[in-house]
Figure 1 (cartoon, one colour):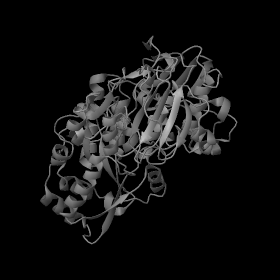
Figure 2 (cartoon, rainbow, N blue to C red):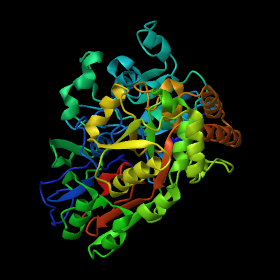
Figure 3 (cartoon, rainbow, N blue to C red):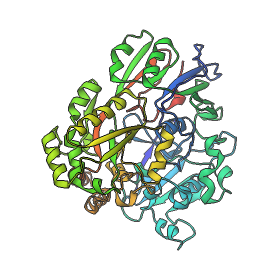
Figure 4 (spheres, rainbow, N blue to C red):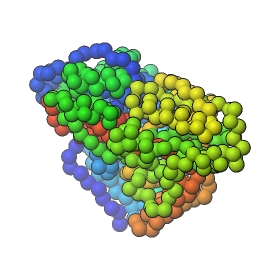
Amino acid sequence: MARRFRYGAFGVAVLAAVSAAACTGPAADSGSGGASGKSAINVYLYQEPAGIFSPLAPSSGPDNQVMSFLDQGLLAVDPNYKLQPQLAQSYDVSRDAKTFTFHLRQGLKWSDGQPFTSQDVLFSYRLLADPKSTSATAGSYTAVEGVSDFVSGKAKAISGFSAPDDATFVIKATKPDIGLLAQIGTAYVMPKHILGDVPVAQVAKNSYFRAPTATLGPYKFVDYKTNQYVHVTANPGYPSPAKIKDVYLKPMTSDVATAQLGNGGIDIASFSPADLKTVQGFDDVAVQEKPGAGFVRIALNQTKSSFKDVRVRQAFLYAIDRKALVDKVLGGKATVQNSDFFAGNTPSGINEYGYDPQKAKSLLAAAGWDPNRTVELQWVPGQRDRDSTTTIVQSQLAAVGVKVKLKQVQAAQIAPTYDKKSYDMTLYGGGNYAVDSWNVNVITACDQQYPKGGNIVWFCDKKLDDQMAKANGTADAAQRKALYDQAVLEENSQADLMWLYDPTGLWAVNKRIKGFQAPGSQDSAFWNPAGWSL
């Protein structure tokens, strides 16, 4: 017997925030909102978008946040980190957790008027699972029945994806896979009527993804002015039309965003804990807080021999006073992170890697670290906590004999360093590991090494992979939790990433805006922008 999940209310739009740069563009309109929409608001983007609004591209926080206004998936993640139907009206999970049946909402149309059907979903999932499309998440689909034969050329289609009728889409896994829903169920769907005739190897470079002409979300794309704004406008064909007509998503530094909150130039923005008192002093601004589901970390490129040694990775953790970093840089509005897993899902007994410079020096000496070597730490500037963190990390690593050169880059420059495996260290954040612990697999598994998945450090631990797979294939919740606890302890001991902190999402919202619910962090999705009003 299958379990059924049904929700009557339509709505759920996912993800938004964005990039670093100066901003110009339309000022906020203080007029009344409403479906007739003579209104506009300005939303802060924490980084400059790469400008590729594609589910095939490597994950980019600002681009994903723009896409949350435009695109939709079968499922979405709500502000409480629970999966909710979006394009699906409901879904069934078979008792053995191998078959997932999605019942699609009836009568939906793309913003260009073309009908949405299960063929769009089938088309999208085939592209996302096909490495030939350069899909950055192709590795997440290997658990689907028939994917391996399709990728190897033994089959011309993926047997685990089917569309029995226009309103039904089915995914079949090769074995019980509880976490598959969270891992691929939220993927954005692409329009077959626009991209269906494009050769698979060329589709990712199609001009559509820089200026999408047909979308399913509450907003339509208008234009993107580099270093200024992304403009989206209400989609009149959306079942519950957006109440605010125009939204301008503006990249700028966090200090500029805070200043513009005070003068009305920005209506919605995440902000630094250092600015909390300032923001609380703005009469027209309300503050919302939300525990984060991801974390800020430093990736250590393990294709480089020095970072393959677990003692080096552990030493780097001992070298940084992460508790002081949370207290002083983030004003206590964060928690120290000690694994890739959501803190609420971790067991007691994990190594907390407390600040211990002497232990760091000892481990580095045992690993044969060359104190004359200089490593480069790259990051996208513009967020006060991350900017301060880089200089603290540089100083504290220097104190244990590690020379670090800091390098500022733009978001669009990050992916090429992954492609070439050329970077040493990258500071970045994000992720949602609260929905299901299986989401951690995307950044740790051997078969998820970039470009197949999100494992951008090329870490590989077969023992951890086995533990994760056993947990994900166990239907009993208590047994699954016990198995994941073992996986947490293993991953924690291997220090696959240089975990720093899980920041509390701090958001400032102009009081004229109603219906906004804070995401977990500055790079998380915006929830249901169709429900915002003035």
